[in-house]
Each structure stands twice: as C-alpha cells, then as structure tokens.
Amino acid sequence: MKNLAIIFMLSINSIALMAQYDIVYDSTFGTDGTVILPYQIVANKGLFLQSDGKVVLLSNKKINNSTTEFTTIRLNPNGTLDLTYNNAGLNNSPTSFDSDPDMCGLMFPNNDLIVAGSEPYINPLSAQGIHFYKYLENGRMDSLFGNGGVLTIKEDSSFLFCKDMIRYNDTSLLMLYIGYPFPNSTVQRQLVICKVNLNGQLDSSFAVNGKLRQPLNPYPDALKITLDDHGAIYVAVNYNAPSLNYNKIIKLNPDLTLNTAFNFQIDPPNHSISNVAFDEDGKLIIIASRIGYGYKVWRFMPNGVPDNSFSKDGLFVGHLNYYTANPKQFIQQPDGKILIGINIGANAIRLNLNGTMDFSFDLDGVVELVPYLGTGVVTFRSSGMELLPDGKMLFMTETDTDQIKIIQVKTRP
Image (cartoon, rainbow, N blue to C red; front, side, top):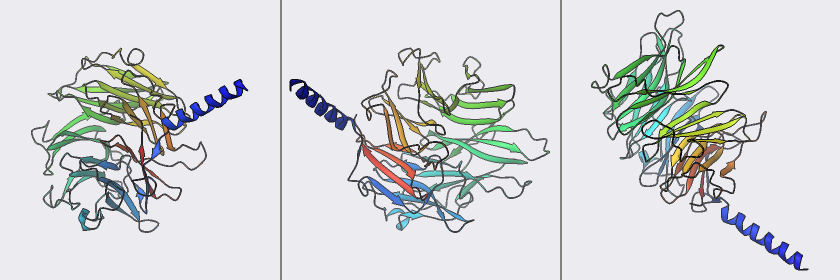
C-alpha cells in the first residue's frame, strides 16, 4: 500500500511538472490563441511585429487558378483585423511581384515596412528586376518612395532574385540579391549588395552608385547577409558541384574590402548554412542544418574565435525528427536565450545562453504546435515567428486548406 502511495505521488508530481512546462495557447488572441485568414503564405518571413504590438502579414489572395494578389494585412494585439490600416485592415494595391516566394520584408522602428520581390519570369531575354515598395504605418503605400512609389533595380542581361534584406541603420537597408545571366550571355553571374535609403533611392555613397558587385564564381548562390556593430558585412554563400561542395562566410570590412583573416567554411558532406546573425553581445551566431541529419549552431567572439563558453568549443549539435525541415530564424530573448524557428509548421527550439538545450521550453527544448508529419505527406509551411515583449510567441503557418494560420502561445521564461 505504501508503494502504491509513493507511485501515486510520483505520478501526480510528474503531471504537475508536465503542466508547468507545457506551452499554452493564449486565449486572449483570436479564438483560443488562433486566427485563420482566407489568404495564403507567400514569403519565407511574412510576419512582422510593430512596436505597439500590432502584427503585419505578407500574404497572397488567390483570385483564380492562375492569378494571385499580393496583400499586406494588419492584426490588432488581440488578433482582430485592424481597420485603421489602410482604412480596411489590408492593402492589396498592385505590385510587380505578387507570388515571388523569395520576396523579403523589413520592418523599421517607426513601423514603416519595406517589401521587395522579383517580377515574374516571362521573356527569357527580358531583364527580370527587383521592385521595392514602402508601406507606411497607416497601411498606405508611400507615393513619394522611389519613382512614383516604387524603386526598380535591373542589371543588364540578367535575371535578379532576392536573397536577404537587413536594416543598415534607421534610415537605410542592405539588400542581397543574385544576378543570373541570360542564356548564352557573356555577363558573369554575380552577387550584388545594394544600399537603399528610406526615400527609395540608392545610396550613391555606398560602393559604386549604391551597389557592391562581387563575381559569384566559384559560388553559385548567396544565402544570408548580416552586419556587425562596426559596419563589417558578412555574407553566407555556397558552392555545389560534383567535385566541390561547401558553404562559407565571406567577411567584408567596413571599407568593403575582403577580410582574408576571417575564415569559416563547412566542408562536405555536411550541413548548409541557413542563417547568420549577431547577438546582443556582438557575437556571431551561425545556424546550419542537413536535412535528415540535424542541425548545428556556432557562436564566435567579436574577434572571430570560437566562443568556448557556448556548448562545446563554441558549437552546439542538435537532432530533429524532420526530414524536410531545417532550423532557420534566429531571435534572442532579453535574458540571452536563443530561439530558433523551424521552416516547417509552427515549431521552435530554445537554447540556453551557455549553448545547452533549454529543457524548460516545452519539456525537451523543442515546441511543436503544427508538427512535421513525415515524408510523403502534406507539410505545413512556415512564414516566421515573433517574440512579444511579454514573452509570448507568435507563429505564422497554414491550415490543411492552405489558409494562413496565426498562433499565439504563452511560454515559460
């Protein structure tokens, strides 16, 4: 009988412990923590938190089988449509990119939103440009931005594709894009970084007329861009060929010259870089994953050496039961803990400041709200996550009918 009592008490304690660690849907948001919208996910990162707690979404409205309409939407902190945004809660003014999956969005401290994307591929010998639009805090497009409300960038004999966009300061941004030459063209494939001011003009003081061009050979693709506190630029690139396959990070000094002393490279057969960013202490965070084999997180000191206080020799190695997903988005909590969003469903990982898995985060350090279901089945896309000042988390994913699904949850610190 005594043994039964002990077992009973242990069971009660275990249940209490699990309840203590559970992620809880926030009933103050939408319906039991969830909002469903009759729109579709359009971007890898389509969820943006304003300073007042409102949320702006990038989405597509399907008009018919061949036509979509790019739409920005704003929700109040409780998940209702904010009708003060463009006097309608949304803005579906025409753009030149619509369903570009590589489009980029960037929110500024004044809640202005810049969105950029590539125009549809139509003519194989017609330059495909990148178009920038600016949405003001009131939800209207800024007609004074660029030329009549749009900034268009084109390169001779090239197709252009957005890769990443980051804030340079409170009045300008850096866009990373790739230029692929037309068939049979003598133009080189190139990586381009351009600097755009918030008035929609290229900053002519940056590089050459606002653009820094770097021949991509031998790198066929660029992945991410970030900036340190001193103005140095870090670009993640990859090379993939039968005899050579690796990812590396190129560092450009503040004067835009190549920093040959910095060397970070992942050799095959290994992981691919999915994000590169700086934490609040100026340390470089690199996230890489290999589908079906897990993920790695590195942390480097500002001087470029591994941070040995982070996990083991500056490297954390984790494993996930995902075959088609990879950890991607990086957010640092005010207490220094690291949130890593996964690009499938509504899922996240949390690491402690010392680089160990935070097991207080939904028991195992991984929260799975809309999980990966396995190979050969429907997979729910992710369009990002946000951390609210009160510690709540927002996820943007989709339903099984491809409608946008916003989830807000309460988490343990």
